[in-house]
Length: 590
Image (cartoon, rainbow, N blue to C red):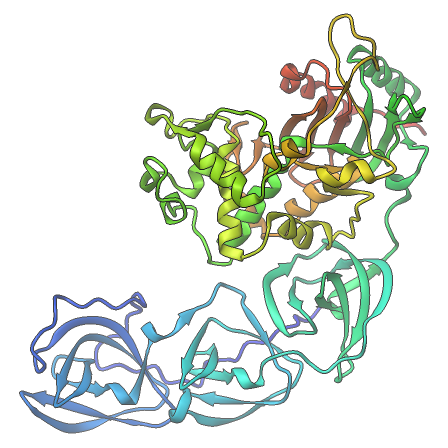
């Protein structure tokens, strides 16, 4: 399928230089403090000539003499600068200079992340150069078209986007297309060609592309004035309909109230015997070769009410949530708003050794930070939870660089997310995961909303001398809020698989960016879970609810073991090995 974006060819542009052209860093570097006005200062930059030829000068003392011209639309390496009679000149060869007023410096441009796009709300002239120095080309770009851009620059209050070397589009021509009112629908689409995700009808690029073969629930459709249809896949987040094909709605395998069991008699008997040996109460989901082969509940969701567990039962999935927090952090890194090498001192300078603790250390829990876990007495806001963590944390230099599982790392990472986005963590999860997947509160959400759901589960305590449903465990609202970004969400077994699958298939970040986040394959922790050569593993326990999550890196094989009566949870890693072997080898009924 033809890509839905365009890139202006640059072959017609002349790229000439008095000295050999070399790409240099965009940042400028002055050699020393203020020098004499007619002394050449060391300076590194790139100067671009606009749509008309400009004068080339020779500078000798206070004398400036025109010696020739530089052609339009050319770029030049700058090695120095000088001020003569109040005018700044940039050195482009040993004895030749250009005037500041005649060129645009790369240092004045803002580089944009890879694959940033803009959409045109009306027909637009393509210009050579910007501002008053711009020259219209012979090309008019069509309304509704989408263009890759690698840089922007503000000139006299107008923003310009570069779509090829020294070819620019004015921000006046960029924005949302006129469109019809949205029509509510409910369907699932499959992306057939990577496509940008927009706020509104091509109003503003969200910083995300939806990857080929990923699936999305569509909530509404609409049509722009040029006849292009759009699908809403999140809260006012839209894609062009031409980039996707419509599929059927959610698989009945995931929603059947009575559950799914496609196992052979022998495999079914083996599984039931093993679940009984673990005193399992909860829901188990098994995915083999991309299809649900088992999704059934065991035991009671609420014994007093006589309500059994089912595929619709809702459980807290505890620390598995850290993988979602990590993916949100990686999304900001992909957008250029953060770096793995940034130190936490940029956000929390009072932390001991903050200048030596990187975002990577926090994600991989190698920061040396720890915090004594204690349930607070009162419900706190996100800011209060983070401040409490800062007040209680400790730093051990001997553990810096070594893995030490400590929730404080992820609590502080939530603080970074909220500082950089200006949004609450709950809103970020809602917008980036729950809404795009069409997951309502009956399928996933935050713990403080769990008890209001008809399919919520009651937590039961296991232990010597206790019957299966003898003792209930109740979690306080204060405890729920204290687990900021670390373990305060709930879902069905299948919804948890959907969220983790979406992350691995590129909903938040690309495949390459995911590999950078989860940069291990030896079973060590990286990016919110444990990474093995062929699969991921995560485990969580909260309020006597336990989750074991396993998924192949291609997402086609998975185990979601989720229980409202945690049992032998200290041996979860060893227990998970049995389920991983079973799901890969289980025989199916004919």
